[in-house]
Length: 106
Image (cartoon, rainbow, N blue to C red; front, side, top):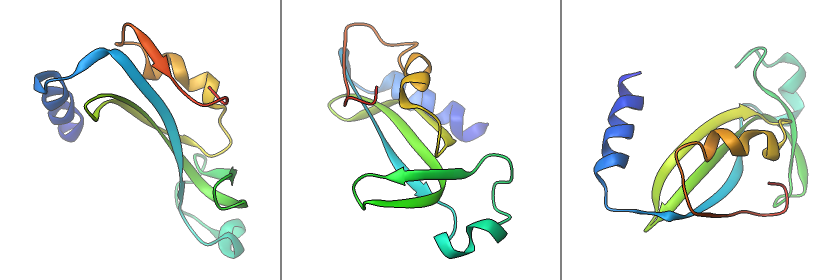
C-alpha cells in the first residue's frame, strides 16, 4: 500500500506526456514448469500461460504495463497468466488521455 502510494506520487510529479501511452505485458513465472502442479506460490492467482518470446508454456502471472513518454510507468497490474490482455486495457488506460499503442493482443 505504501509502495503504491509512493509510486503514484512519483508518477504524478515526473515530467511525462500523457498524450501517448504504450501498453505491453511480460510473463512472470513463479516456479519451474515441472513443479507447477505442486507449486503453492500464489494459490488461486497463478495460472498457466504462453510465453510467445520463449515459445513455451509457463506457470505464473503476467505483468501488464502502461508507459508514457519518456518511459514513466503510468499504470501497472499483475494478473493471472491466462487473463486476456484486452480485458485489462481499460484498467491500464483509466487515467490516460490521447493515443495508446499496443500489440494485437490488446
